[in-house]
Amino acid sequence: MTPIAEDRWRRAMMELRAVIVRRGVRGTDVDDVVQASLEKALRHLDRLQDPARFEAWVKRIAANAALDEMRAAGRRAPHLDADAIPLAEAEEVPGPLAFAACVAPFIARLAAADAEVLRLKDLEERTFSALAAHLAISLPAAKARVRRARQRLAAALRSCCDAPPAPTCDTGCCADA
Image (cartoon, rainbow, N blue to C red; front, side, top):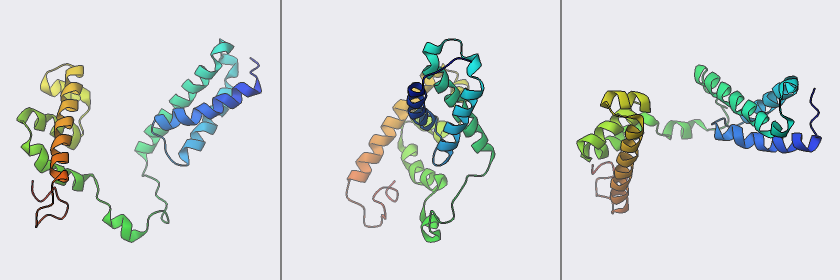
């Protein structure tokens, strides 16, 4: 077993949280993934080939554990603490469909090519690979098209939302679109 100094373990522990959060793990699950990563590193310390690369090795274990957690979270119902959000507030929070309904008129006013890539990528939630295949373009080109279309949509939303609201508009944007 390769001996690793205690201060290196402490430094690695501090960096693991950031690695795991960057991978999308949130809330109390972060601590669980940190602990699981450290346990795995301890169990498999004999597999560490280069002690000088200890921190990178532990970060890789943490990144893989975070991805495993995110995959598992996708297969189970989201954990909701009943006391975290009062029922009245929870009912008022608009979901993705409400957002899509509000943004759809703005997307429809964009150029046809921009509207199509935003509809496919953001409303239908296609992957970039699927979008590129559908449009018969390269993956980088698909990403660039989505980025430019999102920039144009953001500009349209900013111009509308910065204007004074119409008399019949609750939000200042959606009713005018």
